[in-house]
Image (cartoon, rainbow, N blue to C red; front, side):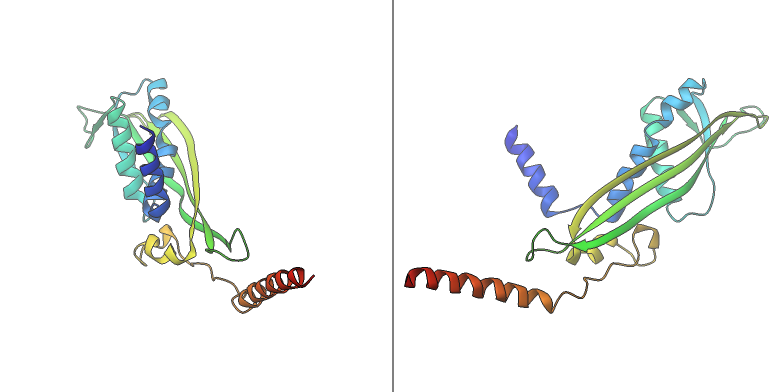
Length: 198
């Protein structure tokens, strides 16, 4: 069992999730409280309607449908006068990936960037007469650190700006770093030979 955990950990370290996968984790976490909220409002059958024109609305829709059906709720394709089910309206208020600063743990080593995937949703359930049955805000944030060199590969399509746009620059320390490293190495060599001479 421990060898499987080690292999999974190694896989995660070597292959960090894409920005879409990281965002999907945030959406899943945000939507996880939705089934209990609906059940508390005595809603077990409903129609789902996405609002707004966010590029990532499809991800919220897909995740919400999956979670609700897993929890035993019935999602209807549409409502009619004969079957007037409550309508759950979901609107992404904040959805996407943002980057933090470029940093490294030591003077030398891989430059890393923090990625923060956030999801904030407005969820409102209305009955057939338009009365509000439930109204909640759901949110979640997931973050990690990845090598700066992997950012363009993990970001995906340039058209999907909500999944991370404006990759941060590596910074202006590229000239300073070799000088610092050279100074440290030269100091170590000097100390080594001066201690042997004594």
